[in-house]
Image 1 (cartoon, helix red, strand yellow):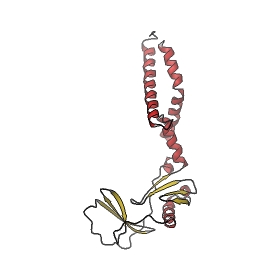
Image 2 (cartoon, rainbow, N blue to C red):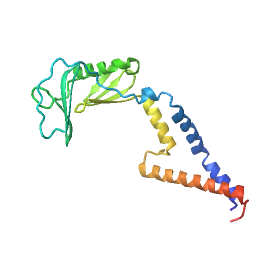
Image 3 (cartoon, one colour):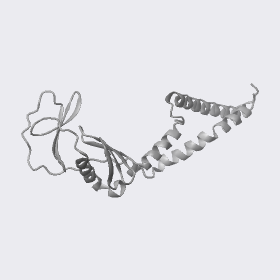
Image 4 (cartoon, rainbow, N blue to C red):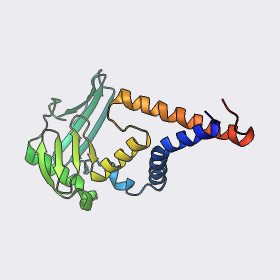
Amino acid sequence: MQARKLHRIIGLVLLIPFFGWALTGFVFFVKPGYAGAYEILRVKTYPLATIAPIAPEPAWREIRYFRTILGDHLLVRTDKGWENLDPTTRQPRAIPQEAQLKQLLSDAFSINPSRYGSVLTVSGDRATTSTGVQLTLDWNSMSLQQSGLDTNRIDRLYKIHYLQWTGIKSLDRVLGFTGIFLILTLSGLGAWIAFIGNPRR
């Protein structure tokens, strides 16, 4: 098969990926809406009124002491991870009931109420807001993760860009390697045609 003909066939095969790469690459470069989509949401903290005496235990690697709308929190990190303790009793604090979780989340939303709106539903450590944002609370580390429709849209663009089209990891990996191989082949054929001519194989 002539190099020019093979070059044309591969180019046609790669038209859709090239279009996807160009479009998504432009989005990644300009980053429209990234600020809100990947905003780091934190629980709101308040000045400490008093501090209970803390005698660190040998297993503790790190401690954090702060106050939220739900009261004081003593977070300790051990080899097993973070724990949320009651500063007075040193006992693990159970995840609050729905009403208290809504209070904690609503307080955190005050930094950007237009994005988060109000809490609609709470199920365990997960919540949904009136603006469609999904939230997950890690109670032991008092950290929040948020994702909205914009986050999901940008994540889909990443999947398009990296040829993760099927959702099946092994198959998407094959697609990725195939795409890279075809690009290298297309480039090699283009260089061959440009500098050597169009020899027959």
